[in-house]
Length: 266
Image 1 (tube, rainbow, N blue to C red):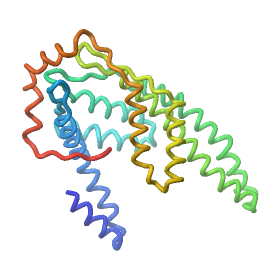
Image 2 (spheres, one colour):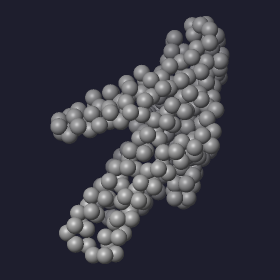
Image 3 (cartoon, rainbow, N blue to C red):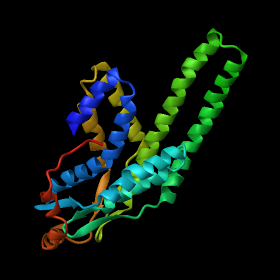
Image 4 (cartoon, rainbow, N blue to C red):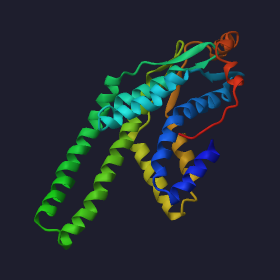
């Protein structure tokens, strides 16, 4: 599979039309690859000697990773919050520990609420302080000062969108984990938006100063920040829960042994 992708990428340099073909091929196989990756990761993750597992059909995977993203794009990202909620519900809802599935109760309405709370102010700021001045500049005359405003305004607009997306991602992480349960046990995430922005700024500075050599350390620091903000609200003794699930592990545990899995990074 990787060899085919590599050959298509090389051929696309000399035949630009192949980029479209490559995109179609990747879109067609990505949901299957994502499902196999999730199976691989969970199969080789264990707690108290009992493996996690991921059980899903191809149809459910294509619906989550292909149908909903396509609908989000076709609606100019108006359905993006719903697509993100469906993908998260798919990943969590098909994951299990022993004989118990994880459950996520966060609704699409909550995803939309956070989206509007973050993205709407960002879009208003972009419209008032970036788009309007740029349109006025282009309407009058694109002189030296106007050119400078364009060169400053466009990066500012992209930065505001990126900043809003980072805030939205933190809110979704807290929402989705706080709405996740495993049997009687619940989870909670209290990740700070300001803390995340500070770490991202610090990582960016060190990556620039060290010519990307700091990138692996930046990834570790970001992941540690997220995991430190999470906690499991256990009901009773976890050892007893794990021991009870080990007796019913057949509901999930053997499926991962029936295929030669692989892992991909999302």
